Length: 475
Image (cartoon, rainbow, N blue to C red; front, side, top):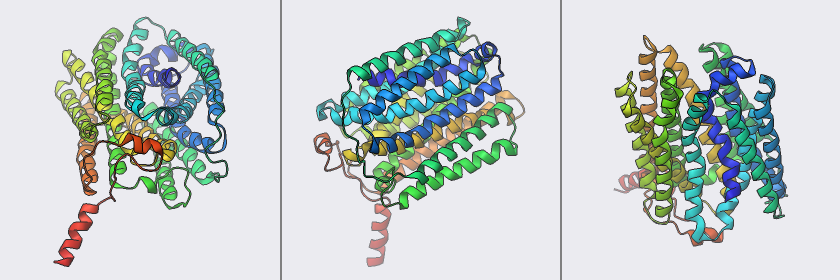
């Protein structure tokens, strides 16, 4: 468990903390803020595509050896990022950090869930929720405090220290397990589509935010990359032995879970980045204080999630989280342009919403399949979530800066898009889930842990509509 925490938390903190540090970092590295924005976007793209690469490598190579290799490379990349003498070294190291974090995520997290006894899965789920979303929640506070101290390298050196600790833990806990399926074919087409799609889409999004211009250099790769990623999903659906089990996950419960997770991530990350943009005119200390409620909310929901894990209330919890994001977007629209205590309430709602919605929705999807497919299913889920969350935020920042008569009106318009995404996620999630007419049941973790069956039934998508049509035809 400590290994997973040390592997996942550092980079996820950096992804949000760096938004408050870009001015200091650009000055210290001798580069422009637009170049740094591009580096952040490409690093997010590397994080997204690393999920596919990790799933492919896990089929053919011993997983623990892979994890030790990932940890070693991440430690080197973290040291280079902290000590970078110039922008090119930092950019390469930061992109590598994004790629290696997703490699470690797919290599370490699914075994954490499947290897431990079924009775410990709720605890693992709660800690995983806290690792991922608690780390993101603490990012603005950490970044604000570092900015107030007029430095950024201390944070990166702390990340390097944690990375070295994770490497030591991976070596000490090394267990030479065999690869999952060494005879499986290499899905080269999926890897090419994933790499080129993510590279193009995130380059386009980074260019859009960096230049604040919707020109062919930004729009064409963004659209082309998104199309390649859609083609990847379609290709994997039709493939008989896919790298990621798209067809196996096309029933009502996992489709609803993925839809809720992706829309929540897109809306919440968008609101967070827009809020941080608004807070640029405040002091870094103010930003750090305003985001403290988000951290508290993430911790509370992680505990609640673990407590409810064996009950039938996980789907309602996920949908309730989306309503929290809706409320956060509405409050921020009403509060602008003022900055006051209501901002702290908004960050608390974001923390509640993301922690209550995304992780439960991901587990809803994962537990709808057999345990043997969890690693590849988790790769698909995390790829979808990373693409929607990290692509939406820079697009919204661009829209906030170009829509409306001024910065405030543009931000309100962009927040309206976040609100629409969250509402669509709630309504669409309800429709997709109920379309299969599933029973609201507690997960059978012992059955799922045995590997033979899913933890709960996931009826075919749109079964309710098909049944109604058949009834009309019969009548």
